[in-house]
Image (tube, rainbow, N blue to C red):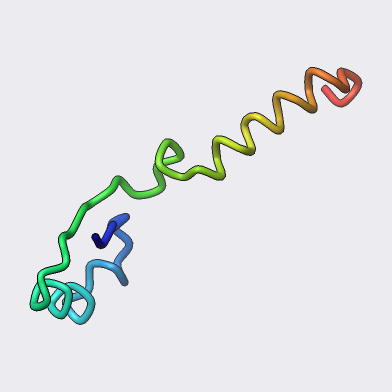
Length: 58
């Protein structure tokens, strides 16, 4: 499956046409969505941990 984040290079015909020819399914995701980016969840948890354990950084 090809997951597209609506970035212009991913939406170019040179990319999408060959994928369609061989039958690769296409899924469009919202651009810049932090919910879909796993590292954003890690940064949020790390920030919470640091803020809870070192209150002088606030």
